[in-house]
Image (cartoon, rainbow, N blue to C red; front, side):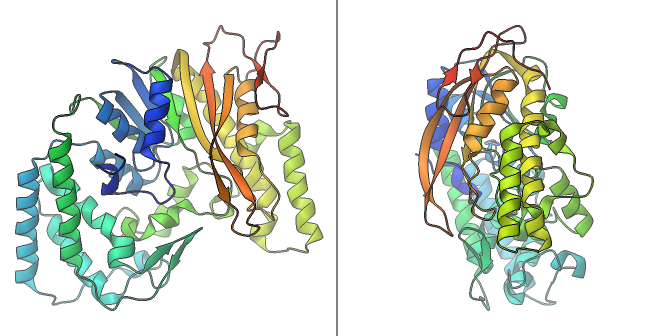
Length: 426
């Protein structure tokens, strides 16, 4: 049930579609409702909403992920037409042959992990991408997404584990063949969803920073939120989509990569810049301050002196400050009674100091006037370094409205505690 449409292009760290279905059902989302995913990624929430006939909006700062999400909620192409265009492109590529061999400009090639793709598969990929640029707009983006999806592991040399890495080099790859197999999957899925609840239900994907959600959404326009923000760890999420981002032209220079990272919540040290100041929003938060101090104390104890390790305390504060900023701005866009589900995971990447992400996020939300309905255990993951179990949770919230009285969430408890004090403001 999770594969159709979702499998057109998946972010390796995305959450499962059935989790979205479960929470939309639990929240009682019905016809006419609008569902938001402010950390949209490749569109898992949006695709599920479309399958169920709900209007949805996604915010995403990564252009490759945003492109994937937008294509995955566009079910207008005729399956037969998609197959015909793919066959015509394949024939044109075959007639053109492989001379002269194509390659990337030096600055674009420098953005890739060394060994991401071998020269001959790259040349074939770029020749196919150039031919796809000539296809009419009705089918072009779907054909390009099929090529992007095949890039990392079927054409390129990438492997995915705790972090993206480079595996054994392929001297060659059947680029056109694997691309056409991806197109066929798309065509078959379009045939399957044609009889769904409402294939024309609106689904918008906006180029936006989730921390500025209020700038892109109308007041009281959102009925429910199902999302998964990045986790605080040393994963550079832009690396996961780097190869296809460069090959399809979404990233061409270091300046563009820097701009991309600056539009994301700071979750790893490779995305921290001198002017970042989201930490000011949690400057007085006692537990986050203690957590950052504990990470710094561990660094000193272990005699870790690299520039990245020195940034661990700061990125922790920036991360939670960014989520605070997001939740604070989002309130304006929520209808009173809106329910929210945030999939987050505890982390130990920063010198093995435990970061209880869900519990801290719940505390921030409570301080902003949200009602914390619970922390649902989604699954347990094994920490790469220590093999200890880390909780992955769904923080479940309710927005009572600007006149509502928030419920104080005890950071030492797994359930919300009523409070007679009004909720705070940022």
